[in-house]
Length: 468
Image (tube, rainbow, N blue to C red; front, side, top):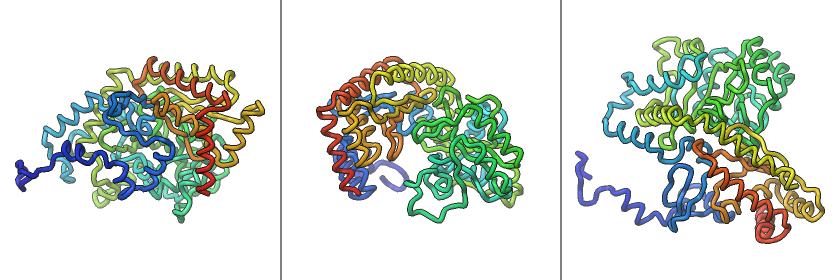
């Protein structure tokens, strides 16, 4: 390619590059990126080679389809390669906009902010960044500055991101270990109003950040907790931050998960993931007018909080297209209906399988929890797994779902016997039938007490012991 952009004999050719070197994917990761990722994928048999994807499915080189019940950790809300989102991105690239000049006001950020705020009429302004953790970082900074207080409360087992500020309100030691010192924030148990009030009485709390449904384990607070927490926070002049990075944009059957509880109006709301359409990273922090005006209090502070790629045209176009699809295809209603169907059918299996203890969640955010069986034979096998490492049985379920039934799922968190389902919000009864049928087959094999599934369990035990 010559400096003026015209073709040259040795120009960059992405198609050719992938054809020539795509087969090196696992070796390249092992050599140049996180070397533990390919190692982990090889160990559990997840080292697949997917050739293409569309909607809620992947296809391998042999043309076999795989049902995606993970949605890229919730990113692919409207499915992979949605034609409306694709067209919007082609259009914005073809428009050759004067993007990211930093010293003008392009229309797309304003239009996306206007659209997002229409779903949260009690909020007034939006800051656009590039990810969920950046949306949380923004909320933490804004809350501290607006209140003049240093401390933020969060819930045990919460996940709010992995950058330093977000990590300070991350309730999992496994993510925090080795990265201290962090910010002086304080964890309380999910749903514990007494603990919340006790911390608020100290007078130094800027905000309480909470996932309306925790992603790790898929746990909801008790009914009424968010509303009562909001009342306590207002009484003590602290802010409520709703982390809707995973639960927002329709995931739980309402546009935001906090909307399941009447009267809850957070001061700041964080969104990301599904807003991207699976293409261009985007995060957004929505907040009240007075908070933004405190942070941006003068022209001298106009760039006191900013992001180099925030509000870029491609991300804004993707976000607008996603919200259009959500409305036109009634995606939120589909998430509610399909989620209710899937959860009901899975819950009906709890009495059938002694290893299956609970099915919970809202919309298309569902947790399937396993627990100690009653029968002696199964109990001894369960004890073997637990002695090696908690969470191995859930991994034993995830692997045959992929290997035998071509369904991609995930264990909900480290040391948890919970599988989390967060599929694209566009799935329907066909996908529900396929998953329930496959899950039933895996449970039948697990309760049979022998076979390849338990052989794999012993392999996991050896791996867990070797890693100690």
